[in-house]
Image (cartoon, rainbow, N blue to C red; front, side):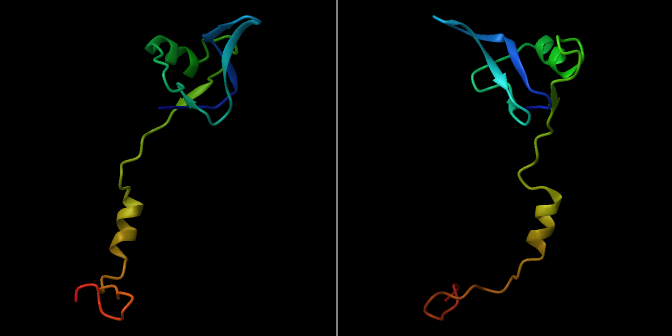
Length: 94
């Protein structure tokens, strides 16, 4: 997944309308590509480098996090291992 670091209109993602062409607009922080779009490796290289019309990187690679990061694993180790009490005052194990 990539994140937009500079706003841009994707000139290769166009929708034809009666009033003219509409280009998909990306704002800073948006995910690239939008759902349903499969850009080529060349297009990703163009947008993440300076070989585009703005002459600057527009997107950056976002490393996907593992379901349980080391920080979350440490938090789990610090949780109270004692049985939880049910509403009736009995422990959940009873």
